[in-house]
Each structure stands twice: as C-alpha cells, then as structure tokens.
Image 1 (cartoon, rainbow, N blue to C red):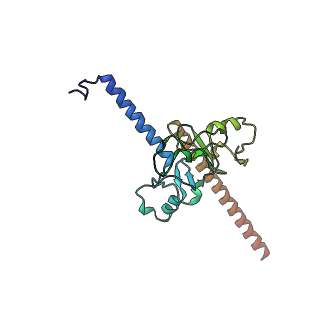
Image 2: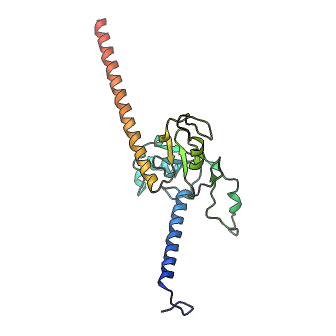
Length: 221
C-alpha cells in the first residue's frame, strides 16, 4: 500500500521518521521536568523546592505529601520532613511573559523558561545543566558555577548571594540524567555516612558527660 501520493516510503525514510518522533518525545519529557511538579504534575510556581535527588516540586505539594502520604500513589519516600527539601532562590526571566497571552494567539516558544541563570542569562529549560546550592538555595547554571569556583584553594562562595558553602557536596544537580544520577547517588552516600558519624560522636560525647556528671554527684555525697 502506498501513501496519499501513491508512493511507498523507503525503509530509511521510515527509520528517520521514527527517530525524529523519539527525539521529539524525549525532548517533551525533558522539558516537562522543568515545567511541572514531580509530585502532582501541576505547573511549577514559586515557592519551588528541590530534594536531595535534584527533583523539583511545588512547596505546597510537598506539604500535602507530608501531611497525608496516603493520598499520593507515588512520592519521595526519603522526604520525611521539610528539612529534607530546600526552597529555591530563582531568578526570573524578564522576557518570559512576552511569549504568553491569555488568548493563545501568540507564538509559544516551548523552550522559553520563566527562570534564568543570573550570571549567564541561560534559560532553565533542560537544554543546559543547572545546579542549586543547598546552603542558600540559589540556582545557577553549571557553567557559571564552574567558572567562578574553579580554584580549589579558594573558599567556596555562592556567586549570587556570596554565602559560603562547605564543599561540592552542597551543590545539587537539578533533574540529573545519566552520569549525573551516579554523582548524586555518591553524594547522598557520603552525606549519610557523615551524618551517621556525627550522630555517633554526639552520642559518645553525651555518654561521657553523663558519666562525668554521675561521678561528680557521688563525690559530692
């Protein structure tokens, strides 16, 4: 059977069409991660938070999730409290609103984003890698962060607000993919190990203090 024009498409043409469709679907899925809440699939709107996996949520969605997990078919089981997410300090794009109107008769650029990197002006739309600094919540493109903090001997400071942060483990890659997923997993393992170590040290310190106080009490008697 032929097409409308009476021609039979060649195999390589069908393969190209299939690949184009797959790329289009992949791009749409990628853009959705930057436009919609991971939990409720509503459009992302301030206040927006990020979890330790780099996933984005509306803050009110996380609050609802913590109050009643049973109403959600899925959700981040590792988020136990609001301290497990960080509210993002985002920079708005002054050009974003010009691409939208209520009548819908303007051209809509699907790659336009309401947020940009404050240093480079790159749009936060999935085409470029973006990061958040957990300490302050500021969001920047990886390109900007790498260009500022490229000297390991210098103190690490947020180029947007100037706040210092301890290490690269304070940097969250937003919506990580491929090798970045492994980097985020390694980061979580290091932080978990550090927290367990600190918790063990605090317990030992408390036990020593309690034992010391007990001895003082006996001496007093």
